[in-house]
Amino acid sequence: MPFTSTSSLTAADVNNFLRGLVRDNTTYTKTGAATETDLASTTITGGTISATGGIYVVAAGTVTNSAAGAKTIDLKFGATNIATVSRTGANAQDWLIEAWGFNIATNAQRWVVRYSTTDATTVTGDYITSAIDTTANVILKLTGELANGADTITQNAFDVFVVQIA
Image 1 (cartoon, one colour):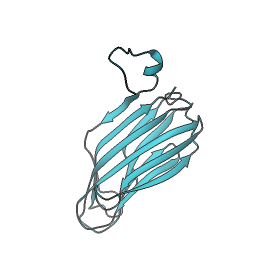
Image 2 (cartoon, one colour):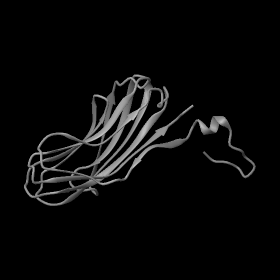
Image 3 (cartoon, rainbow, N blue to C red):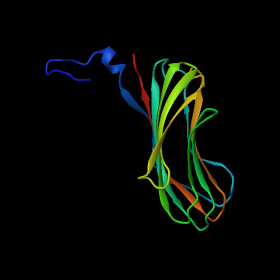
């Protein structure tokens, strides 16, 4: 929103900002068991996302490969799978998920998602909907699953921002 040199910030302006909710740039690594495991997780307290607000999520990392089995990374909002990145190649690659989700009601969201398909520079998009009640606590999480226990998924970024629109 543009401001003139004589403008001041008002309470209404503050209600239309993007603010950080979670910033976790710690490196988490999954190697071994071929089961779905949480890489990162946060609970979004009920009411944090307003009826017309939303969230922006950025997650990124790498996969290494000892075998050609699938390495799958999922972004989940409550019970809804928002994005899936899957790697099957026998080489090390980066991965990326970016997701914008906006409430159209406190129990209905629209998502625009970008995620890497073969490396972090080849990106595709998707549009999905979810029906999660944001007046209650919602778990947002990133999971990883390996088809071969010798492979590795590393998560290096999991950043979540709340968008408030008055």
